[in-house]
Length: 215
Image (tube, rainbow, N blue to C red; front, side, top):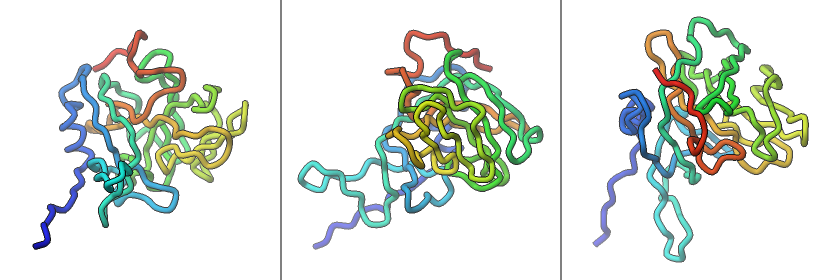
């Protein structure tokens, strides 16, 4: 008899955030492993999918079941809730620079003008990322190209990142995505609530460093 398996589900951004405890404010301890990251060839349905890790194929190699989203091992971490902008104050191509989750962590909030993985707002096009290159930490602030939705090229070694696809590398010497800032909306306010990935130079985004003040 063939054993039946429950279909693997996804959850909305709101459910994901509340499940981690982001909605309660302050610092929350805990991580979620196995966040669905869109691959080069396609996107998740709405940019928000969160999936369980794939099953073991018998030889130690993870093998996603048919229909499951492609899963890249990443860590989503809850941090202080910090207001970083307003929806009404952003037009396509606008960039707001800020520091999160620490005072030393440079980041930018961007309105792409096109739907993006992990994007918020009515058009799903508002995203935020750390702006230190994941290759050698060189600054990327000020390099956003709205016509292509990319950040870069890095002034040191020319890596360019696609902000519509979780900050994935388009070209250059970096081998990992930019860390994405997880966002929520409260009324008109855009709130940073956590991070997806680790900032360059840190073993832990919140280790031994001054954290920005939450709300």
